[in-house]
Length: 206
Image (cartoon, rainbow, N blue to C red; front, side):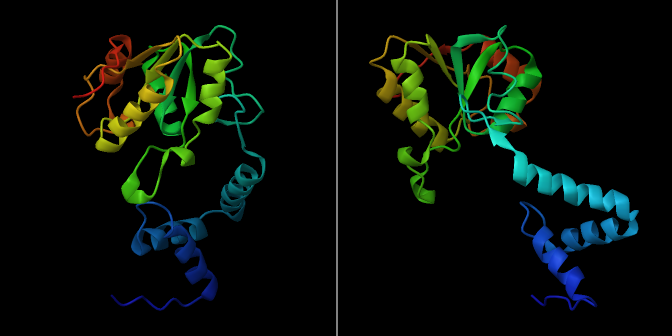
C-alpha cells in the first residue's frame, strides 16, 4: 500500500498521530486533521488543551479504579449508594453503560481487563488485589460479575468465583438477557438493565 506524500511535515506528523487511535485509518486521520485546520485557531487549541489537561490531571479512584477528577470518584463518594454491593466490570466504558440503565445503585470495581492467555493477560495483570482487600475487611456482601459474555469474560468469572468463594459473600452474575459473545457497552440499556435486576447466583459451568 502506497503511503501518500504530504505537502507538510507537520501535517504528516498530525495524521500519523491520529491514525494511532482505535478504528482510525489514515484517510480518516487526514480528514480529522484537515477539519481542525479549517476551524478557528482558538477552537482547535481548546481540543489540544483539553487533551493535555486530561493527561496531566486525570486520576483513578483509589477505591474502584474509575476515572475521576478527585481521589475518590463521584460514585464511591455518594453516601446514597449501596457500598456493600460491588459490580465487577472490565473497564470504565462498562460503568457508563450500566449507569445509563439507572437500575443499579451499588458501587463498582474496575478490573482493567479480563483474563486472555492469547493476549498474554493473566490474573496478575488485573486489579484484583484491592477487591480482595474489601472482602477481607468485611465491607462487601455481594459481588456482581458484570463481564462480557465471551470466552475470556467467562474465564475471568470462573477465576474470580474460585478465588472469592471462601468469603461470606454472595456472588451473582448478570442474567443472560445479554447475548453470548456481546460486549456490555454495545448492549441496549433496557436489556442491560433487566440483566442487572434479574441477576442470578453464579454457578460453576460444567
